[in-house]
Image (cartoon, rainbow, N blue to C red; front, top):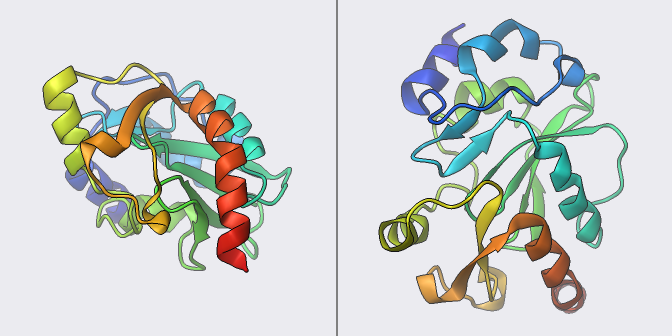
Length: 197
């Protein structure tokens, strides 16, 4: 249980909490520690993890099908205040399992072979190892000026970092996460196609 202890020590407990939304069948180890970790907002509301309502974010993955390949066997685990979404793929198959991140800051669907459900809890989240996932400065600045984000409201980036956008508050706007992904999709799809050439 060392990994769970590290998570609680470094990521904290949910504040405010939410009902658990990730189903038991998402991964074999989830039922063993879900009650200890809980679900809801973590790190001063920067992260929303394991709570109710995450299935709604499937619409975001579908809207960005130009970077997210279709897959039936996936479960959304959470998101951060910029709308980066944590996705567990093949949670029922240890040989294929991987956690990936759809990150609007970089317009990428990123994964690492060592990033599994267990290692996400034990090290990747506590040690803040996911690239471009824990840059909280803009969030902190916005929160100080405007207060907490509403549930599933994000700071949506205007010009992504991969297109020379900046991590500056005037490059972000408060938006519903699903609306953001849907509205940004046409322009980002076009830009992504150019980047791949």
